[in-house]
Length: 246
Image: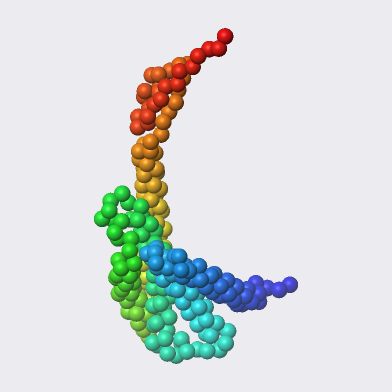
């Protein structure tokens, strides 16, 4: 009988290959669709293109380095301090940046449906490019403490009683690292859901307002109750007289 420890490496490597192939093909298909002539000028598509590029880079960057380290005998991440620090840094930044691109696309759809003309002006390529650059710079700068965390966690200090290297400082660094990852993974979907609800509410109100402004005419006969017809606001009424044929 094959043990779990024997099949785990095979399962891991085949899973990585599957994710790499499907992820790469999916992101390339997204780019082909988003960069079509009819869509490329929209601000929300700009955000989605950037998000797909970041996802593509993240999946290839992380998995290829993992393959090279664990399955092809390349220990560059263990011997080269700069590469290892860059790997830890980008593996935290890239998924957050890709998720932020989807969040900004949702924000663009929200402001584009706003009844306020000032908010609708934010749905432009000019504003989208600047907002995306500022957002990405904020993520890169706020995640720079990952470079410091790497140095703390890899100092040649003895293990403490809890088995954590670097003592209390290392524990605090690891804690804030987990807080950043968990906060971004939870807050971004919550904000997207909130913006989606706002978009639905705005569109629902706009449909009702448009329905009231359209020149509909309600026709009724002598047999209808005029009090019910008179209670309908925003509609023109027309009475049709009927006669009984003998």
